[in-house]
Length: 398
Image: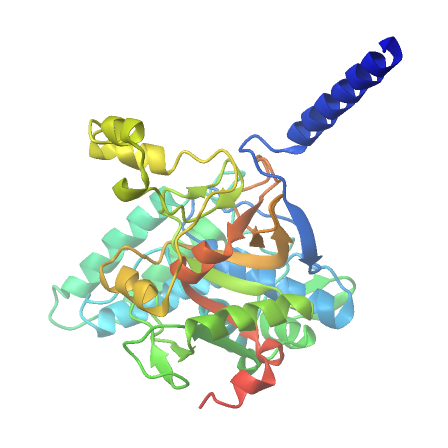
């Protein structure tokens, strides 16, 4: 009998220890993520105090494309692209009498546009930090540029002078630094255009894709967001096919540029995750829960909904719900990132692993995990190598 009691006690201790070990494996938000498929990618960067996520995401993606094609891991200049985008935005701003966006933001199409038109430069040749800062801080820069462009667009002479572009470039040179006509890198001399050509990337090989019902499927359309200042065209596919494109890309070793809404309460950067909690309906509550719920303020109810301490039941996202969120401005064009893998949590729920550009001082060293429902509801668009699109979907695109 004493032996049996000793065995039972030992078993109880073991079970408790295993439970404690399992709990210890969970992160601070109550999750345990297991990576399933990860593509090769370059290191996490830091956009710091600049609204240039779109450029960090696009540049990272093309660095990944170079790794996939040649095995070379390069660090390419984001600020080279940002500088030329400011110039191009300014020209459009003047031509449209100040009615287009002149802001730090951009779209997933901007990087290939600049690379094709102006070229590219390594980070060590052009880091864009010509204004006494160690990290990007564009507050003053954008204030100066905005004031200058408002003055130009006001056209006080009733005819623009021939000097305004030179004045703009003078500001850009002062902050970012002058762009070299030629430079030497790894023993070879390049121009920005010849260097871009040496990378072997062709802009036409990349396709922007979205999913909305106010445009016909399988036809290109201009995505109506302010940061699409290029009026770039996106292919339109059903929501499930958008997901299939991303899944196929990751499975075949391609990263994906991801433009999405990160203003949701379920976006928890510090905790390294983004989920779309369903929340309880009053009909699902017992009497005690309902009595407490009706006494809460709207803010307290929101806080309760987004208090996430482990896997939660999430919203079932349909094409109709996705469209409604966009039409009612519940889904907004906030941020550009890079999807670099897939993962599961401790309950088997599927996630995408995403590389951000907000430095590495975070629980997953600059990465976070996005649930499938969050992706389906909150994706604005993706940019992928056309070879990453399943043939069954690609053949329907016009």
